[in-house]
Length: 580
Image 1: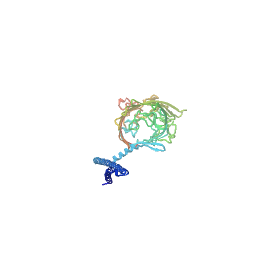
Image 2: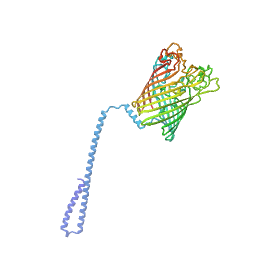
Image 3: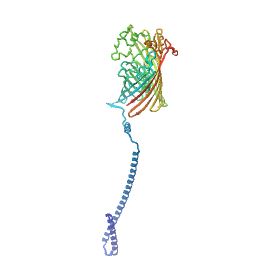
Image 4: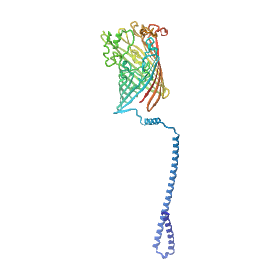
């Protein structure tokens, strides 16, 4: 029995006593004093109130005990549910396959890349982005040319080279590349940048300024830019070595957006107009970045072609005088102290090549369209002994290009063309800019270049492409056809005749008239993730070289009618890894 029970018993006894006392009071009221009766009634009421309080407390305790029991039941039910879930998880763990260490590392790397993606470095407010790739390529040509990853397209005739009867195959890693981009933003409207890109294709004895200014160590691009962005329009200045302004671009006229054929061959495709050379350019964009206009001044250089010009005249006009040349301009190598005197061919140039271009781009019904038109002005210089003044020859070229996304994210096509005089060195085939008459007067050559291609994005990993290009020069004759380009007196009768004497090379003396090529290829991204990108590429190309017609019947092949042509099949396979 607890205290509350005892209190209840006591209260009950008091009620009994109070009841008896009340009866006695009524029987003997005339014998009891009124004050005693009132006191007893007060005591009884107090006891009754206490009993009611005790009853309320008992009811509260019962309610609390009921709630506690309910909580205990709920907890037990939750515990049973948790135990059931634990058992289910244990069964899943037991049945699950073993997770390898590589899988764990891959999951961790993926999670880190998503949460803390960072492919740049930061130094004193400057953002530095590394770039480049490692490449190993396999090269095959069915006619030996002695070229590395960059093809010369000057396919030898059997009568010109004994080696042309043999094929060639080799590996090369020289197209591997490293680059960096440093960027800063001093204010909301100004962007500063410096970009450098280098590879390993330079050759000390072949370094020159003809197209890709390629002195060792070889600089592909090295320039700085200042961009002022004013919202709907902008001003852009570039200084340094970069792709020529006439190269097709895919985004306005911004650097690092050039649209080059996607092949493996480092000399690209004949018909593709380009150069990488020092210069300065100013570009403006308008109409909310849809219309662009630019002007550049770029490094000049002249390439020479033709036959029938005395050797000493050729040496004089090209600046490559020798100690035995009667009409030389300079002693051998006198102005080549910091160039390669053994192999470099520097022309007497003193006026930059000027290039102007306009471009328009927009989205038309979901199709990205980019159109360009450009013009180039060139000055060719010469000085011959015994003449009172130097002589300049002027030349012009015009061209345009279009890059269209025919099917969004699936099919891209491009077409470009350029024509004019003195534009040879801007083509991948590297035909001559000028020729000379027998007196050494230089004459710019007329030429056109065409390129058409398509790239099919078959899957997110696989790209397929096909390109066709052509470069062709027009015959320019002097002195009755005995001097100039494509001289009619050139003997082509021995182009397909192999003999044991070196004299056969004189029997295939025609100048190159035309270079054509068809190329097909594919790129497969075999890995693309947090650790960079790896891809393999395949390319096959068919190149055709044709000479101007001359004397002879091309070794009994009447179809050539004295205009011999030869060809070369080339195949490339490559592996590239882009770590950045």
